[in-house]
Image (cartoon, rainbow, N blue to C red; front, side, top):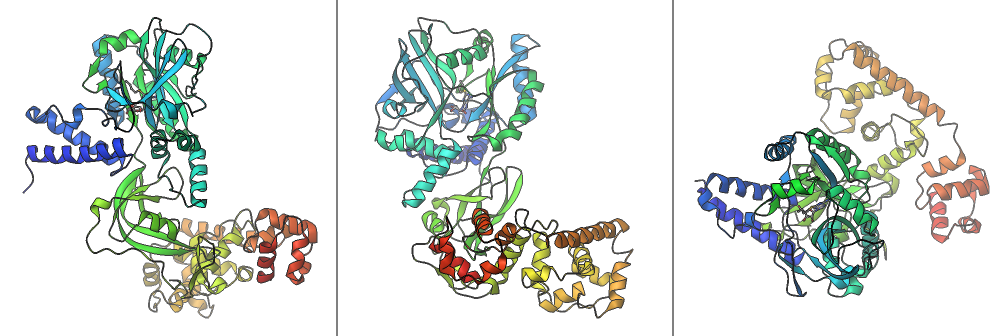
Length: 621
Ligand code: IVH
């Protein structure tokens, strides 16, 4: 039986409160923001339909969390409010329509701003000096984090210029730039410290460190986006002019803030920022629209927890929850064994994610990810989706900690970890098909031999069918082989293709199977002729595309015979030999034969080549 509205509202309140308390008071994230937002919206809708359920202490009536007792309390003279959310164009249009109707105005101007993903802060200045800084807390009482805020270089201790009010509260977001977050985590990994889950948690955690020195170690930034209490002095009559004034007094204000007109202007801004999002130096989770003129703002006023003159327009969530169905190992070019979580497919920021990297065995141990766990996955821009954390409360009974398998799942060789190394490796080297495929893909890549068109799925089949065993075999491929490869792989299924042309297939997955569907032994000229003249199986256009691809690929392979020594050395994928080392070796020796036969310790004579690289070269040749 489905729960009654009252029961459902009660369950929602409990979930929202639990997540909110963990987030605001312990800097801990139980569920992704998107799910939190969804729960709040469901509760809001329920309370709208059943007003008797809207109790006074419902989370829909409150902002944020309670101030924690570790810091002194600060009462905000002007409450720090939250923002309502819009997730669709229609909700933005409704927002504009409401203001337009209330103010009886057609032309409305808005300040459109990035919504930084950090922590809201209020900075208090008296007679131009910074005297106190506080977190938002529950909106009316926050925590005094002045000591930590003094560690943030971009927050002015003294205002610049002149003309500021005697009392001025500046509000804005403390955040951690992506580069600083990466640098912090790189250090933490090196020193076995605690790795931070994302820049927002990093900012929140740092600001609430009791020891300001700890907080100083993590580089925080700040953007101003508004004001609180203002006494004995005036601010300009629009929000945008106020931001310009704050900038003149020494506060960082985002360059992305812009004045736009009407809902069309807002939506164009949303799209523009959405496109630039991945390239920004910091994380944003949406944009904020604020009616620009303060007189209009005052007329509009507030609803319980948010102004009616401003709204946050959120981007699709970059984090979602899902469950781990399996943890598998992926073998890279140098044999590195990377654990990958196979997930129950879930849409993250508009893309279905069914795999997420777990980076390495240490990371799994740190997160304690187990098969069956409910996890938070994150996909930001074009980076590989990753598992951010485990929701411990939802772990089913009877799970066991994950362990690195003893053998490579591809070739069966031992998986080993060298002293002092973080990564585990398959010891099979080039006898391992997985490593062979990666080595060939690297060889063909743009910065190496630049063989355009030889994508992963073709390499995969060529290696599995035993046609290409090493990079040298690439130079023996024929145009016909490639044409068949393309036609078969691009067909819906090999079985469909085989049925069309009356070919009997050996058991799937075997080498014979692949050889058969490719018919690459050349013995059955009749089948090949049929495959090439299959008007029913392939439209003429498909064959034309495949032919052009095969011709181009043969030409690219041919062209790669004429390359530089430097590229060839890099393309061979020798461990520890990147582009720079390849360049150095090529200038120094100028000849592959010399390099091939050099006793390895002599490599150490080359500038910038150490013992490890020299040994790798010796081992390879
Ligand atoms: S204005 C009364 N502007 O988003 C208006 N908030 O969901 C109060 N935020 O608590 C907020 N960037 O932490 C505003 N440009 C921006 C913002 C912004 C990020 C955060 C802020 C606020 C939360 C509301």
